[in-house]
Image (cartoon, helix red, strand yellow):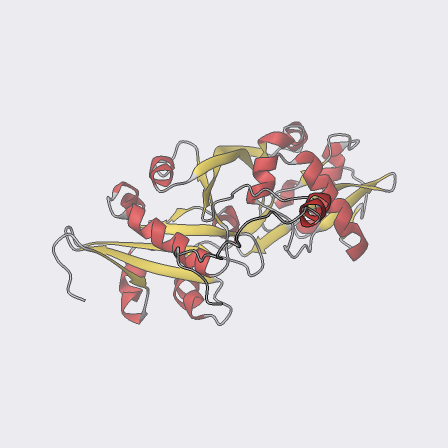
Length: 326
Protein backbone atom coordinates (compact mmCIF):
# COMPACT_ATOMS: atom_id res chain seq x y z
CA UNK A 1 0.00 0.00 0.00
CA UNK A 2 1.28 3.44 -0.89
CA UNK A 3 2.07 5.67 2.05
CA UNK A 4 1.69 9.40 2.00
CA UNK A 5 3.65 11.95 3.97
CA UNK A 6 2.97 11.65 7.69
CA UNK A 7 1.64 8.09 7.46
CA UNK A 8 2.44 5.82 10.40
CA UNK A 9 3.54 2.33 9.46
CA UNK A 10 3.39 -0.46 12.08
CA UNK A 11 4.46 -4.04 11.42
CA UNK A 12 6.04 -7.02 13.20
CA UNK A 13 9.82 -6.93 13.46
CA UNK A 14 11.78 -8.98 10.98
CA UNK A 15 15.40 -9.89 10.33
CA UNK A 16 16.31 -6.59 8.64
CA UNK A 17 15.23 -4.71 11.80
CA UNK A 18 18.03 -6.25 13.87
CA UNK A 19 20.26 -3.24 13.34
CA UNK A 20 17.59 -0.92 14.80
CA UNK A 21 17.03 -3.19 17.81
CA UNK A 22 20.78 -3.45 18.39
CA UNK A 23 21.28 0.30 18.02
CA UNK A 24 18.78 1.11 20.78
CA UNK A 25 19.71 -1.76 23.11
CA UNK A 26 20.85 0.66 25.82
CA UNK A 27 17.76 2.88 25.60
CA UNK A 28 15.00 0.56 26.81
CA UNK A 29 11.98 1.80 28.76
CA UNK A 30 10.63 -1.20 30.68
CA UNK A 31 7.02 -1.65 31.75
CA UNK A 32 7.36 -5.14 33.26
CA UNK A 33 9.38 -5.60 36.47
CA UNK A 34 9.66 -9.34 35.96
CA UNK A 35 11.37 -8.75 32.62
CA UNK A 36 13.53 -5.81 33.65
CA UNK A 37 14.83 -7.17 36.98
CA UNK A 38 15.36 -10.83 36.12
CA UNK A 39 16.40 -10.98 32.46
CA UNK A 40 16.62 -7.54 30.92
CA UNK A 41 16.56 -6.78 27.22
CA UNK A 42 17.65 -9.59 24.96
CA UNK A 43 17.96 -9.01 21.23
CA UNK A 44 17.43 -12.69 20.45
CA UNK A 45 14.35 -13.00 22.68
CA UNK A 46 12.86 -9.76 21.36
CA UNK A 47 13.25 -10.97 17.79
CA UNK A 48 12.48 -14.68 18.02
CA UNK A 49 9.70 -14.29 20.58
CA UNK A 50 7.27 -13.33 17.81
CA UNK A 51 8.17 -16.53 15.93
CA UNK A 52 7.22 -18.82 18.81
CA UNK A 53 4.41 -21.31 18.02
CA UNK A 54 2.80 -20.48 21.37
CA UNK A 55 2.56 -16.80 20.27
CA UNK A 56 3.11 -15.47 23.76
CA UNK A 57 5.28 -12.57 22.64
CA UNK A 58 4.80 -9.94 19.95
CA UNK A 59 7.30 -7.26 18.99
CA UNK A 60 6.34 -4.48 16.59
CA UNK A 61 8.19 -1.69 14.85
CA UNK A 62 6.61 1.68 14.21
CA UNK A 63 7.96 4.20 11.74
CA UNK A 64 6.79 7.72 11.09
CA UNK A 65 7.37 8.91 7.55
CA UNK A 66 7.25 12.49 8.74
CA UNK A 67 10.39 12.40 10.89
CA UNK A 68 11.71 8.94 9.87
CA UNK A 69 11.80 7.89 13.54
CA UNK A 70 11.76 4.23 14.58
CA UNK A 71 9.96 2.93 17.68
CA UNK A 72 9.90 -0.67 18.87
CA UNK A 73 7.56 -2.14 21.47
CA UNK A 74 6.81 -5.57 22.86
CA UNK A 75 3.81 -7.17 24.56
CA UNK A 76 3.88 -10.53 26.39
CA UNK A 77 0.96 -12.82 27.07
CA UNK A 78 0.71 -16.18 28.85
CA UNK A 79 -1.99 -18.38 27.41
CA UNK A 80 -5.21 -18.76 29.46
CA UNK A 81 -4.50 -15.69 31.60
CA UNK A 82 -6.78 -12.66 31.64
CA UNK A 83 -4.12 -9.98 31.17
CA UNK A 84 -1.12 -9.37 28.94
CA UNK A 85 1.86 -7.22 29.94
CA UNK A 86 3.51 -4.39 28.10
CA UNK A 87 7.17 -5.44 28.04
CA UNK A 88 9.17 -2.47 26.80
CA UNK A 89 9.38 0.42 24.36
CA UNK A 90 12.59 1.70 22.82
CA UNK A 91 14.26 4.11 22.46
CA UNK A 92 13.38 5.97 25.66
CA UNK A 93 13.13 9.29 23.87
CA UNK A 94 10.21 7.85 21.91
CA UNK A 95 8.04 8.50 24.98
CA UNK A 96 7.59 12.02 23.61
CA UNK A 97 6.93 10.88 20.05
CA UNK A 98 3.48 11.65 18.57
CA UNK A 99 3.36 8.15 17.05
CA UNK A 100 3.79 6.32 20.38
CA UNK A 101 0.03 6.15 20.87
CA UNK A 102 -0.39 4.31 17.57
CA UNK A 103 2.25 1.76 18.55
CA UNK A 104 0.63 1.15 21.97
CA UNK A 105 -2.76 0.73 20.31
CA UNK A 106 -1.34 -1.87 17.91
CA UNK A 107 0.26 -3.79 20.77
CA UNK A 108 -3.07 -3.77 22.61
CA UNK A 109 -4.88 -5.12 19.55
CA UNK A 110 -2.30 -7.88 19.17
CA UNK A 111 -2.67 -8.86 22.83
CA UNK A 112 -6.45 -8.93 22.53
CA UNK A 113 -6.18 -11.08 19.42
CA UNK A 114 -4.24 -13.62 21.49
CA UNK A 115 -6.96 -13.76 24.13
CA UNK A 116 -6.02 -11.05 26.65
CA UNK A 117 -8.79 -8.97 28.21
CA UNK A 118 -6.47 -6.32 29.69
CA UNK A 119 -3.00 -4.88 29.08
CA UNK A 120 -0.90 -4.09 32.18
CA UNK A 121 2.09 -1.79 32.65
CA UNK A 122 4.32 -1.00 35.66
CA UNK A 123 5.98 2.39 35.59
CA UNK A 124 7.77 4.76 37.99
CA UNK A 125 5.28 7.40 39.13
CA UNK A 126 7.82 10.11 38.20
CA UNK A 127 8.49 8.71 34.73
CA UNK A 128 7.67 10.62 31.58
CA UNK A 129 5.83 7.48 30.44
CA UNK A 130 2.85 8.03 32.76
CA UNK A 131 1.19 10.72 30.62
CA UNK A 132 1.63 8.90 27.28
CA UNK A 133 0.13 5.78 28.83
CA UNK A 134 -2.85 7.79 30.07
CA UNK A 135 -3.36 9.24 26.60
CA UNK A 136 -3.28 5.68 25.22
CA UNK A 137 -6.16 4.65 27.48
CA UNK A 138 -4.30 3.30 30.54
CA UNK A 139 -5.59 4.04 34.05
CA UNK A 140 -4.01 3.44 37.48
CA UNK A 141 -5.46 0.55 39.47
CA UNK A 142 -2.88 0.26 42.31
CA UNK A 143 0.48 1.46 43.65
CA UNK A 144 3.55 -0.46 44.73
CA UNK A 145 7.05 0.17 46.08
CA UNK A 146 10.12 -1.78 45.03
CA UNK A 147 12.61 -3.14 47.57
CA UNK A 148 16.00 -4.69 46.85
CA UNK A 149 17.88 -7.16 49.04
CA UNK A 150 21.38 -8.48 48.51
CA UNK A 151 21.18 -12.25 48.84
CA UNK A 152 24.64 -12.46 50.44
CA UNK A 153 23.57 -10.13 53.31
CA UNK A 154 20.58 -12.19 54.43
CA UNK A 155 21.76 -13.13 57.91
CA UNK A 156 19.86 -13.86 61.09
CA UNK A 157 17.78 -16.54 62.71
CA UNK A 158 14.60 -17.71 61.05
CA UNK A 159 12.44 -20.84 60.97
CA UNK A 160 13.68 -23.39 58.45
CA UNK A 161 11.47 -24.75 55.68
CA UNK A 162 8.39 -22.83 56.83
CA UNK A 163 7.60 -22.11 53.17
CA UNK A 164 6.52 -25.17 51.22
CA UNK A 165 5.63 -25.75 47.55
CA UNK A 166 1.97 -25.14 46.82
CA UNK A 167 -0.09 -28.33 46.80
CA UNK A 168 -3.27 -28.75 44.68
CA UNK A 169 -5.49 -28.79 47.78
CA UNK A 170 -4.12 -25.39 48.88
CA UNK A 171 -5.01 -23.51 45.70
CA UNK A 172 -8.49 -22.65 46.93
CA UNK A 173 -7.04 -21.31 50.21
CA UNK A 174 -4.55 -19.14 48.29
CA UNK A 175 -7.31 -17.71 46.12
CA UNK A 176 -9.36 -17.02 49.24
CA UNK A 177 -6.40 -15.22 50.85
CA UNK A 178 -5.90 -13.14 47.72
CA UNK A 179 -9.57 -12.19 47.52
CA UNK A 180 -9.48 -11.15 51.18
CA UNK A 181 -6.43 -8.86 50.86
CA UNK A 182 -6.52 -7.49 47.30
CA UNK A 183 -8.99 -4.69 46.41
CA UNK A 184 -11.57 -5.42 43.69
CA UNK A 185 -9.70 -3.24 41.15
CA UNK A 186 -6.58 -5.36 41.60
CA UNK A 187 -8.48 -8.62 41.40
CA UNK A 188 -10.06 -7.48 38.14
CA UNK A 189 -6.64 -6.71 36.65
CA UNK A 190 -4.62 -9.60 38.11
CA UNK A 191 -7.01 -12.49 38.54
CA UNK A 192 -5.67 -15.80 39.85
CA UNK A 193 -8.40 -17.68 38.00
CA UNK A 194 -6.90 -19.54 35.07
CA UNK A 195 -3.35 -18.72 36.18
CA UNK A 196 -0.90 -21.56 36.71
CA UNK A 197 0.30 -21.20 40.31
CA UNK A 198 3.70 -22.70 41.16
CA UNK A 199 4.74 -20.70 44.20
CA UNK A 200 5.40 -21.27 47.89
CA UNK A 201 2.87 -21.11 50.72
CA UNK A 202 3.27 -20.23 54.39
CA UNK A 203 0.93 -21.80 56.96
CA UNK A 204 0.33 -20.61 60.50
CA UNK A 205 -1.70 -22.78 62.87
CA UNK A 206 -2.74 -24.93 59.93
CA UNK A 207 -4.08 -21.99 57.88
CA UNK A 208 -2.58 -20.55 54.69
CA UNK A 209 -1.33 -17.07 55.61
CA UNK A 210 1.11 -16.30 52.81
CA UNK A 211 1.84 -17.01 49.17
CA UNK A 212 4.80 -16.00 47.01
CA UNK A 213 5.68 -16.85 43.44
CA UNK A 214 9.10 -15.78 42.25
CA UNK A 215 10.43 -15.07 38.77
CA UNK A 216 14.13 -15.88 38.49
CA UNK A 217 16.66 -14.90 35.86
CA UNK A 218 20.37 -14.20 35.47
CA UNK A 219 19.97 -10.63 36.75
CA UNK A 220 17.96 -11.39 39.88
CA UNK A 221 14.78 -12.73 41.48
CA UNK A 222 11.51 -10.82 41.57
CA UNK A 223 8.37 -11.57 43.55
CA UNK A 224 5.20 -9.93 44.85
CA UNK A 225 4.21 -11.76 48.05
CA UNK A 226 0.68 -12.01 49.44
CA UNK A 227 0.90 -12.04 53.25
CA UNK A 228 -1.83 -11.76 55.87
CA UNK A 229 -1.34 -8.98 58.47
CA UNK A 230 -1.76 -11.49 61.34
CA UNK A 231 1.46 -13.33 60.48
CA UNK A 232 3.66 -13.43 63.60
CA UNK A 233 7.36 -12.46 63.40
CA UNK A 234 6.97 -11.31 59.82
CA UNK A 235 10.63 -10.34 59.43
CA UNK A 236 11.75 -13.90 60.24
CA UNK A 237 9.12 -15.37 57.93
CA UNK A 238 10.30 -13.15 55.08
CA UNK A 239 13.92 -14.02 55.78
CA UNK A 240 13.06 -17.70 55.50
CA UNK A 241 11.32 -17.03 52.18
CA UNK A 242 14.27 -15.09 50.76
CA UNK A 243 16.76 -17.77 51.81
CA UNK A 244 14.68 -20.47 50.15
CA UNK A 245 14.54 -18.47 46.90
CA UNK A 246 18.19 -17.36 46.89
CA UNK A 247 20.15 -20.00 48.81
CA UNK A 248 23.49 -19.11 47.19
CA UNK A 249 23.08 -15.36 47.75
CA UNK A 250 24.62 -14.54 44.37
CA UNK A 251 21.62 -12.83 42.85
CA UNK A 252 19.74 -9.86 44.33
CA UNK A 253 16.13 -10.29 45.35
CA UNK A 254 13.51 -7.68 44.45
CA UNK A 255 10.09 -7.43 46.08
CA UNK A 256 7.14 -5.44 44.85
CA UNK A 257 5.09 -4.44 47.91
CA UNK A 258 1.61 -3.24 47.08
CA UNK A 259 0.07 -0.28 48.88
CA UNK A 260 -2.59 -2.55 50.38
CA UNK A 261 0.22 -4.66 51.95
CA UNK A 262 1.79 -1.80 53.92
CA UNK A 263 2.59 -4.02 56.93
CA UNK A 264 5.26 -5.80 54.85
CA UNK A 265 7.45 -2.69 54.43
CA UNK A 266 8.65 -2.36 58.08
CA UNK A 267 9.66 -6.02 58.09
CA UNK A 268 11.70 -5.56 54.91
CA UNK A 269 13.36 -2.44 56.28
CA UNK A 270 14.31 -4.44 59.39
CA UNK A 271 16.08 -6.90 57.08
CA UNK A 272 18.08 -4.08 55.49
CA UNK A 273 16.16 -3.86 52.23
CA UNK A 274 16.88 -0.85 50.02
CA UNK A 275 13.69 1.01 49.11
CA UNK A 276 13.26 1.87 45.46
CA UNK A 277 10.85 4.07 43.52
CA UNK A 278 7.12 3.96 43.95
CA UNK A 279 5.40 2.62 40.88
CA UNK A 280 2.00 3.13 39.32
CA UNK A 281 0.31 -0.07 38.17
CA UNK A 282 -1.69 0.77 35.06
CA UNK A 283 -4.26 -1.11 33.02
CA UNK A 284 -5.85 -0.73 29.60
CA UNK A 285 -9.19 -2.51 29.26
CA UNK A 286 -9.74 -4.13 25.87
CA UNK A 287 -13.27 -5.33 26.60
CA UNK A 288 -16.20 -3.32 27.88
CA UNK A 289 -18.24 -4.84 30.67
CA UNK A 290 -22.00 -4.42 30.53
CA UNK A 291 -24.66 -5.26 33.05
CA UNK A 292 -27.29 -7.68 31.73
CA UNK A 293 -30.56 -8.31 33.55
CA UNK A 294 -31.43 -11.97 34.04
CA UNK A 295 -34.95 -13.16 34.74
CA UNK A 296 -35.41 -15.64 37.54
CA UNK A 297 -36.64 -19.14 36.83
CA UNK A 298 -39.86 -18.41 38.71
CA UNK A 299 -40.56 -15.26 36.66
CA UNK A 300 -40.01 -17.16 33.42
CA UNK A 301 -42.36 -19.91 34.56
CA UNK A 302 -45.07 -17.39 35.47
CA UNK A 303 -44.77 -15.72 32.10
CA UNK A 304 -45.22 -19.05 30.34
CA UNK A 305 -48.35 -19.67 32.46
CA UNK A 306 -50.06 -16.43 31.39
CA UNK A 307 -53.20 -16.84 29.24
CA UNK A 308 -52.88 -16.14 25.55
CA UNK A 309 -54.02 -12.64 24.65
CA UNK A 310 -56.96 -12.47 22.26
CA UNK A 311 -56.52 -10.83 18.92
CA UNK A 312 -54.72 -11.38 15.64
CA UNK A 313 -51.39 -13.20 15.71
CA UNK A 314 -48.44 -10.86 15.41
CA UNK A 315 -45.93 -11.46 12.69
CA UNK A 316 -42.43 -12.45 13.94
CA UNK A 317 -39.85 -9.88 12.97
CA UNK A 318 -36.13 -10.00 12.26
CA UNK A 319 -33.52 -7.60 13.54
CA UNK A 320 -33.59 -5.85 10.18
CA UNK A 321 -37.28 -5.15 10.50
CA UNK A 322 -38.58 -7.65 7.91
CA UNK A 323 -40.84 -10.67 8.62
CA UNK A 324 -39.19 -14.00 9.23
CA UNK A 325 -39.82 -16.68 6.60
CA UNK A 326 -42.70 -18.94 7.65
